[in-house]
Amino acid sequence: MQLRLLTIPFSHYCEKARWALDLTGLPYLEDAHAPVFHYLHNRRWGAGSTVPALVAPEGVLSDSSDILLYAHRHGVPLYPRRYEAEIRSWEDRFNRVIGPQTRVWAYSLILEQPDLIIELLRSCPKHEQRIAKPLLSQIQAGIKQSYQIRPSSTQDSLREINALWDQTDRILASGQPYLVGEAFSAADLTLGALGGIMVMPPQYGFPYPPLERLPAAMRSEIEARRQTPTGKYVLALFRKHRKGIQAYQGERSASVRA
Ligand SMILES: N[C@@H](CCC(=O)N[C@@H](CS)C(=O)NCC(=O)O)C(=O)O
Image (cartoon, rainbow, N blue to C red; front, side):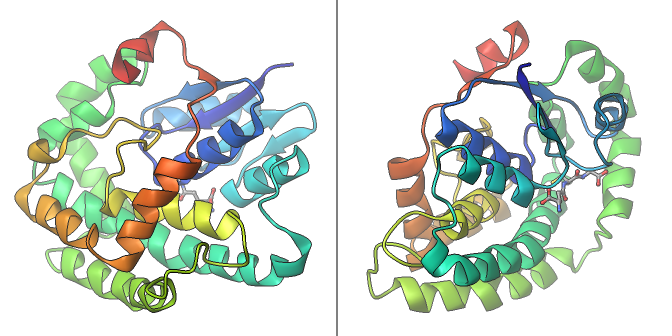
């Protein structure tokens, strides 16, 4: 049975799962769908309502942290026993703060440029893109409502992100090689995947539009973050640890990845 990773392809939690699976070297199929369409496919495969979800011979895993554990059990030492508690504690904080707040930050700015939303759907099935295009204003309204995006959201989310980013800045400024212990772990992978959208590493597993195409406020924030110890660390993590993508994605996204 082939491993199947259900995604909304531009989701940073999906990048977290994709990165971990890529490190295992196991071949898998990325089954990418536009938001809302993903519900149908999740239901079909017995997953919950969110992505990522991994359909594996052992069962269906409906949470990114469970998928990291799966990768660990398949030969990627993401949770070395000696540091496990500390690694899990960082992963949990990144999941609870960096994940949701970077999502609000990104959406609050991207929603101002609706053509970008269409661009983000490029690796989804063509019929989903066709259906989504004329529904753009409803999609914008739906995203605003789901993530409670208000005019103050960009600044509010940055405040929450900074509280944790400042902590990692202080730790990483000393030049220690990894966030926890002596090796790359689930703490690094989670910071990289969820925080990555604030520095846009070229190796990110979803081809985001180039900086010049992003709204000016997003671009300037990314450029500033790239200069912080955490930003530099995340860029280096991707250079050193983001292996090539193992997923078979079919013809529909071959051109996107090229
Ligand atoms: N706890 C979940 C959270 C994942 C999550 O928030 N996924 C979002 C995409 S970034 C999602 O599925 N959103 C669609 C929805 O909630 O309907 C995990 O780590 O896997």
